[in-house]
Length: 356
Length: 253
Ligand SMILES: Nc1ncnc2c1ncn2[C@@H]1O[C@H](COP(=O)(O)OP(=O)(O)O)[C@@H](O)[C@H]1O
Ligand SMILES: [Mg+2]
Image (cartoon, rainbow over all chains, first blue to last red):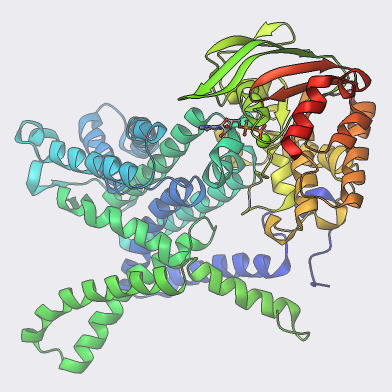
């Protein structure tokens, strides 16, 4: 008998936190985040904010790639669209909408805009799969960045040199420090994760997984490939748009080059490392992807004694490590960190009985 | 209930179906038999909407569905299983069967993201319905949380039937439901098929290789050979038919 898994009602069985480990983990994490917000130093807050923003986007990519089985190498574009929509709207609407309500107007619009563009970018998925779809989405990424950089649009987008971004203002509370932004980002990231989990355990999410696993079988169950593939694209784009909005509020300035292929690849890489099609996959993946360059920086500083001349090796080192990490996971642990934690949990569950 | 009219289908040079016409009567079990390569699976694929026939019509409850996509046909109440099991292998038995309830649920994306409220209510109703009407019925309580990959072949076939039943279909199409099964599993499956007909009044269209089973449970039989319909009628009529004996002996020889 696996302890803690007996259920008296269907409702208890259908819960997200359906065993005591999961409950302890989630409530523990919430507590830890609260302590973190209060006591962590500036540097740790900065890293955590980066993770939170990336997490929101990766949760979105997980819906599309992990659950629906559609590969995208262009989701950096949606983060850009979210960030730029928020910034441009905030600039355009200043004076028209009171500042304390601005957030609640521009963020939903940014989400809606990215969702809509997501549908457009998703159209090729109705005809092509795999590599061809990846290339089509890649093209979307290039086009969006190209448009943002155009001189003709520079008065609104800032062009190649970027544009200053607004601070988030929640009903008069101006989030002008990283610590305040950390609170907002954690709440948004947590909610995003929970919403994605809700999606996956209901009708819509099951349809996504069905399409991923066997699309013709999904069709004979009445699942419209057209509708659900586009829905998946819209949703994942909306998540990335939301991440982009947080990005704009967090940094004081945004540049088009921050949203190029690098970012799109980082989103997919985080998913591979963490575990595709798993709730906690994005969380683990983002932690590793954001922490790794920092760890390398710290180690490099330690070994060189902070020698400025050797600092130029850090960036290539980080990139090599990124590549090696991906290769390692693709070859050795293709199901990601989530699969490793599964094994540990399973062993813990059976303890002190035989290993399994 | 389900009416096929002069169906023609070809793949390049191969004429897979040449003028098939029959009707599956409401609440009855209709069998389609024929040697390997006769076109039985192609017929099913044309009925469920994967192949577009070159000529001919498919009617469902009197409505022409020849041009509808597979998912639209499913919504109308047409369910099927596949000759080589087409379950979702990454999912548990329960999730596979829940997918059968897809068209009956109405939760939209927004409600699904929030879960509490409409989505939760619907999901729990679905769970209860599936437990009572499918899982108990097919006697698969003990495996509901198992991943598909852990199940023996015979049980997988039963789960696939369960997924189709979860659709509460009006017409159920089964493509070789007992192929590869031992005698005991075959008897179990035959009993479940008869129970479905009896308890739910479902119209059943059955493709089968196993002549004995077809003769036992079908009230009407259509015989295909090389894409042609060589006979149709009651089991007694069909088994006495010269062409049918010829086709089967010919295939065996
Ligand atoms: N997708 C396809 N493409 C080409 N030929 C096909 C296809 N599906 C079936 N056929 C051909 O159609 C004929 C009938 O096949 P099928 O319907 O599978 O027969 P059965 O199910 O009665 O064994 C066979 O000659 C087969 O090779
Ligand atoms: Mg066949």
